[in-house]
Image 1: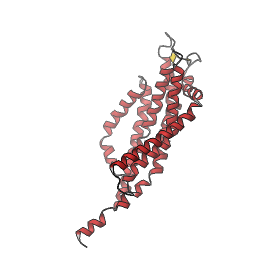
Image 2 (image 1 turned 180 degrees about the vertical axis):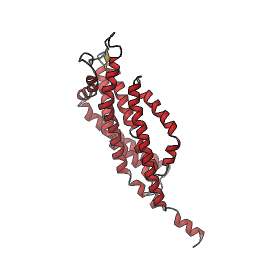
Image 3 (image 1 turned 135 degrees about the horizontal axis):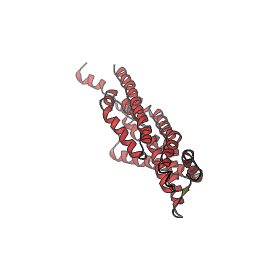
Image 4 (image 1 turned 30 degrees about the vertical axis):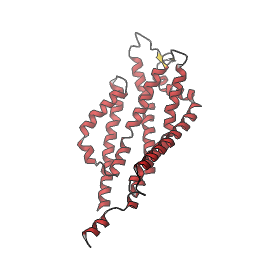
Length: 262
């Protein structure tokens, strides 16, 4: 067998790599289509969420009521007549994002799928399920554990000298930032699985930069959480644990890739 024949046999075929070469214009057309589909998922989610806007706000207010020592301390005000409308609109957007997340993630995968091997394309369903599950799990961890404790601590500061007057807009912003922040950091194992399965990173890469990861964990906690050390630790701690889980996941897929290569 000549060297040319051996090179031909070693090189993956176009069918093995992807279904066919796509031109730049085809990539742009596919990107536009995926954006339209994702926007449609988001719009459907928002329409559904708008019908439950008041229920959703009361749901977001529940951690404050748990953390507050009295009903008066958990009372929320608004400074003008338009504020409830805009807050409900934003709540609809956040809830719509949660509802549309599986569809959006699936369209993200469909956009990158043409450049993957056939066996890599099989990760689509696990990727969507895991990404959705970890995002919702992170938000749930924040909602049931971090928010009640964090709000209780914050309400106790200055309670002997003044009474807080909580505004609707400000409460929505801090609660949403925490929910989305925890949802995003819980995606770390999913991205580790995805990139290690593709061979982009290995567990050695993650181990090499673990010091930077620790600093980044506390930096993210300082950005996303209120300025109290306990709440920050409740974000930084899980992030450190998730980084360790990501190393384990990367190790598993690195060994699997090496075994498949052999």
